[in-house]
Image 1 (spheres, rainbow, N blue to C red):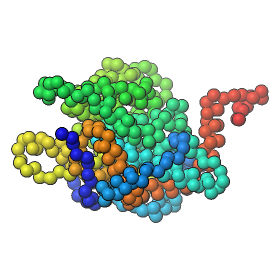
Image 2 (tube, rainbow, N blue to C red):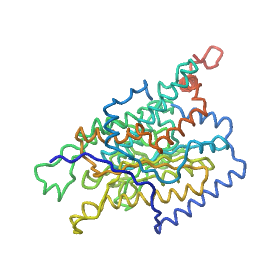
Image 3 (tube, rainbow, N blue to C red):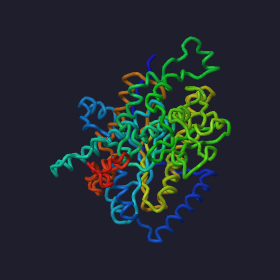
Image 4 (tube, helix red, strand yellow):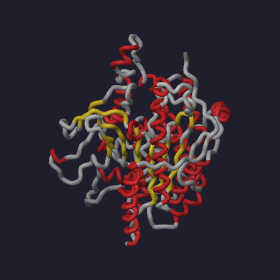
Length: 482
């Protein structure tokens, strides 16, 4: 019997405030970061001209051509099946709020956080692809008016972000976003469309080889899917890239069964600082191994044992980070406050859809077993949203947007063509329906690019950087710039 396609009923807006014993500790830590920010501002902390130039370069960089608009039929389907599909929580802003960036001397840092959700990672993937497409169109429009060729031959939405965090499917997108074949922020391996299509093109391979011969044995002793399909896809996308190779800060969550604790794979911590001996090197991991660890969803895929490249004796068993941090937004925000003290932090948090759960008809064990996991994940995510609201309220120049959709069914592993298409339509419909949160995020990023003149010097600076890496010297000893 085929499973029904996801439908999205009318949206409820807002969220309830929640607290927990641990929330006061987090707020205390956050208060300390605020004190540090205030101290830096009191010392007239401003970015130097050189730093501003670096930011101009760092925020621009994958698309060989402007994407065509989706076919009208897809638009029509989206409009018929969706009304108000977006849940926006936390601080509500408009493009007018962007004047905060223009009127102060602090840099603005964009942070992206992506939830876990299995195959439903298509939803945030399509949202990011839509944003990337519209930003490219604005840049092209700007340069057309100037009569110049736009510098978008190598543009990736990743270049907008100063930190990306993800869990499970979101972790896979985060890892892929930070890869550069030339170790440069001007040249990313994948754009948003590439990563959004990872599940669309490979979903049936990832969730394949289901044990159909002995359901009882599979239920009692093994995971539902053979991991070889997922391993093959991750090897294809990530190859031999390591955590330390990522050119932007990336956080990916998992849960360590041996130590019984949340683990955050942090690309910045994996990079050696100064001259170190082999024993002093920080733990580093292959991206494909981290991706397997963060997505090892209990019952779906087996426990994943991975070891550090720098210290093979550092070996642990991991499962999906969703068991503790399916929504890693708060981890990303606190990391950004630490990395960029005194700067304005703009957080974009994307969900993979949450289930519309009603009271069980029968309050027995089997009935609850079908819903308890979704309830726990949704509850933890709501707590994160509540804490993010409180934190951003304490930092007037920071911003927080969250986009999520309510679904009738939250399947992790359905890979039928119709189901995958419906997930993509849900993501792209935010653009076609001109949702407020999506529009605000889009306009804020575009305003940021406009304030930088769309980086008219991008091509020249890219060439200079590449030539400095492999300089060609003139006879007089100076570097020759072609």
